[in-house]
Image (cartoon, rainbow, N blue to C red):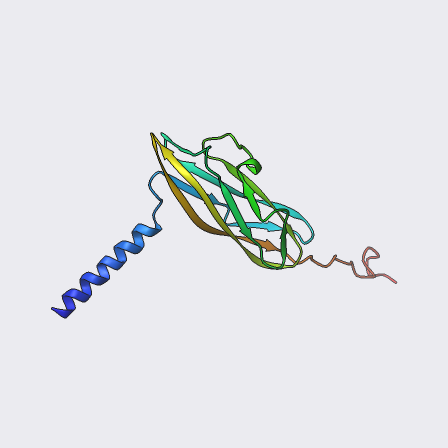
Length: 155
């Protein structure tokens, strides 16, 4: 009996974990998982909201993107709204978040988005967290040819 209860509990936990890993019904937040940037250079992380047909992201409620950058990368803004979206009037806005690399290494940018998904006459709030890795490659040393290069080795 105890084994049966343990087995059923394990199965329920496995199903719950699988359900949480699946796409939410009606919407999805897509974030570029990884970008590479040279030291001192800038890049952009793509963030978008995708909604199923018949749904929209509310234009009456705020779309808020909060960003937490570790040492090694800098941001122009730590909070973005619908007005900073690439396409602010779209039913599902998307963002291109500029980042600047300051230190070599892999840096995890934390992202929190809040918005309302609407369909018909009902809306529901969405609060989701994602992350993206910004890889800053160390500059490579310039290749210096040997002193006797081009002379054929002859003195």
